[in-house]
Image (tube, helix red, strand yellow):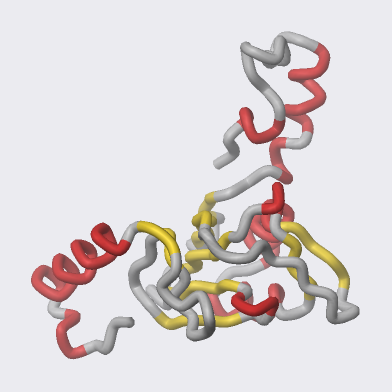
Length: 167
């Protein structure tokens, strides 16, 4: 899924799809993905955080959030493969905003990947909203705690996940 407004397509800017600028923007759409699922069942969703934007500088090849989503959907079949791909890159937040990725595959393996303190972290969880789940100075910073608590209660009640530890 791509929000074309994030790529500059808007009525207010006079860049609707029928305009030349709108057509150029649409050509970039495959690299503006923030959510998607591929033919192998890998699903990636990007959620905005309220923490420090990611700007890793470890000497690896640089990648931005939206291009990473496209790469994962094109190249990964499982959550483990997606994590292995992300570990090869220095992540930089698209549009200067911090994000985390909710990644799941056809087997049901589900994780959150974030970059707290400029380090990639993987949290095993079945639910997410818009606050940081990895440990660190910004642990639980963000919004959506009420939605998260509702998700957790519903999953525990309806799906018998009471036995599984949930963050």
